Image 1 (cartoon, rainbow, N blue to C red):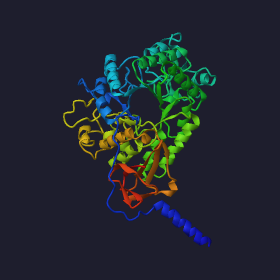
Image 2 (cartoon, helix red, strand yellow):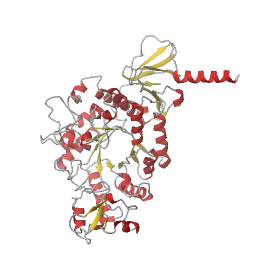
Image 3 (tube, rainbow, N blue to C red):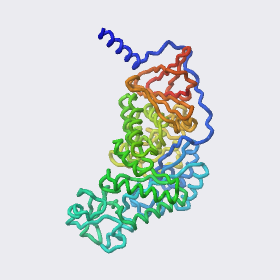
Image 4 (tube, rainbow, N blue to C red):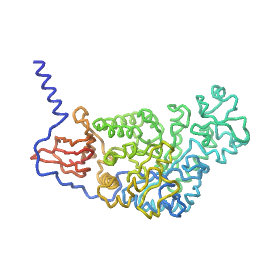
Length: 533
């Protein structure tokens, strides 16, 4: 009798896992997506490296006028906001070592150009977020050069110094603010003036860390933030948020960001702040929700890349849910900010082995999942790039058109993104099967359905669905949307337990089949189907 019960249990479990489909006929039901009312409820943001985006003056370097010229493109795509990587004067090509927090890099334009960009963005309902790098400055920033000149400099306490022959002892004695441990690679020789001292810079000698316990430098930083808020920006992306104090998981870091957020809220109550905590551990990211209202979700991208690379989608919704629960445990009002790759990571297309089908499914997942999704410029046309050989490889010029491309930047000879490897935007816009068209379709879908934009998420037990399938339901009020992806290499089916109102989106010929009252999702390899209940 025990053997019979075990047999029945195994058969039942197998049936649930594999779910053989019933006999169906008549082909897939037609798609019936609702008409978009023009409201950008999807809250999709777009990251721009100005240098590589669009050039208007022919010097080969992207500029703010180029951003302004392409805002119509982003508006038509359905983008709600843009994040501009650093636009301030800097000795580097990337701008993450700032020389002046209240100015525009002359290669990018002028304050007037910025104001014109803001006016156009406001007209189109596009918010603007600026990269704000306050963990460190450039070593050519006037604050730092003057700080190095004398131990009595007004700016000396803006940064972290210690006598060259006693750095470790000074740290141990608590004489170096914010630094709790010694690493010789983080300490650099002062090159002029007080050359018998070293200064602290965790990223490089070009980037001296500020002293977060110096009221004068913090007042200067707050004033710079207010300057840009007065210009109309929505807020800031906060670089290296876990590195303000040496001990990353410290109450000091949390207190710093709480105070920073609180002070800016007194000036602009709805100020937008999103922090960068570059970490694959969800708990390490979640920790910083104690001090910040929004953080980029790096763990979910790493989990999605693994799922796509291993043809296993069933666990991903649970991974997402685990992240959300971790975030909520620290801040019930958290804003989850999912993404694929960004300027500090190997590009999505390259991570996925240049597989366009996988990149399409990645886009479909990003744009139907919870949170406020960010798209890195060029991701929508499948730009490639690996950091091996330099970060420049993942920050190459955007391809607008074939042949004579007046907006394409030429500051760098591309190693990964040429017309032989990436189809330019104009050609992809004319192709309904292109990667761009998938982004456009799913952004529009997200903007159309409140459930996809802001709904809660539920999902089946991974043990009860085929490994290749990723299934979740988004619900807001009475609207329910189910999303089914097949990350496998063969066609899979999934029998639905409820009556479906209509299919609203399909990727790679995924279809909803019906036989009487039975509905079955049929999904070829690397496909997606979105259903309205």
